[in-house]
Image 1: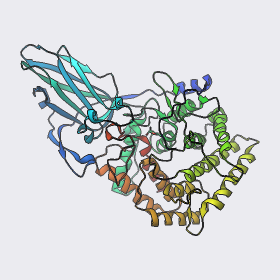
Image 2 (image 1 turned 90 degrees about the vertical axis):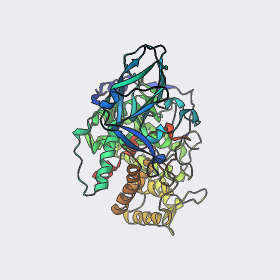
Image 3 (image 1 turned 45 degrees about the vertical axis):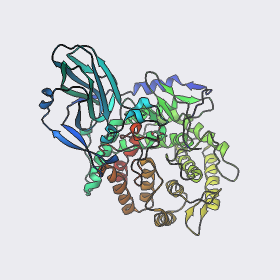
Image 4 (image 1 turned 90 degrees about the horizontal axis):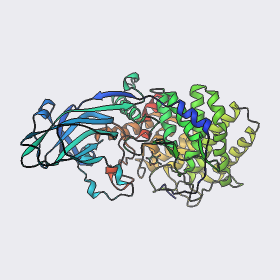
Length: 525
Ligand code: RAM
């Protein structure tokens, strides 16, 4: 089963007050910065940009706004020059005869220009339309300083006057955003990689991460604005390579650790506002990654107290998975506990899932040793069983590729995750990656920077840095060429307008699992 809405309303949750208290203690204070528009723009047809929508400047003199009068159906697009997350406010006044009718104003917030050319009325996707960043307001009295209570993620703000009356017009002035984040972009000094495009990618990646670092590591500040475990693992790694805000990682770990289901499983994501609530969604690979995220955190910080506090939670995730491993070492997942791996459903995820368990179990074994757990050997034995099965049944020695047992399918995710899990020795890993490149590149049918990250990392692990660099430059570089100020939740180069939700209007164009080039280039180059 692929990832879709899960409704598990009967789950009984344990709320561990002590752990949740630690999460609360590590809540960050947000930095706030005032940002003003850089220019007023118009949309143009531009086949080189996402959705064929580009921009041209109308004016960079923002004082022109103060003297421009707007009437029915007239609009203006404010361009803030870069992505922001924050609260927008603006002065609005009427000019002409007395205001004999309300002002009706439509305000759209867009991360990418192409969102402005899509109409919310046409949206028919499966994800809530409430995520569309659009407001329709009736304002009875002018002048007013209009302050938007909702936080937006955007670069562009479009104001459209739905109506005034024939007797008067509207004037806008002083548009301002109070941008917020737990970190400050200027606190990071990015290393020169010696490659212009990689440097640019690292800068955009850092901005992406920053805009997702709020009260928690959000997956995307436009949507879903919550802490996902799979995303947290990668955000934490990129954060260690940039802002190094270990407090926010610690907070995330305690939030997950503090809310587990009665059977011990961790939810795939948690909500933090207005109250802390676990989502009734479970993803196999995400649960396993709790141990990996904790191990990475402990390796980076030496915070053994947090390890002690969260060790049992990590252990339960691993123990829970063993019921799905048969005596040969074969993992078979039930329909209602799927492995996410990627948004695409075009490939079989069984072998990749087996690899994520090996990957997570290895990280957990590091923790058992740090904790002097007497049962450490049991986990090593379980690992051996999984690896033996993988080598004997899932590895096709003739072709140096991992297969899916049921169908013989060979896909990229299986090779990549097995290399990351370190199942074979390094020379075999290289053969696997070479064969993968030979038979399956250019990559198709993979929809997320999340999976592309794992491809790039597997290439680095297999000592193929040039190939990894090439992939990063192609994939993340293309997003930049298409107009990205921050990297996206989903991007299929062969189908740039792909959205997992049936329409780009609810897609997130600042999504933290895409920020990892800054980690990869620091670690491997
Ligand atoms: C989406 C989000 C999130 C991801 C899940 C599985 O809802 O993009 O980041 O982790 O899918």
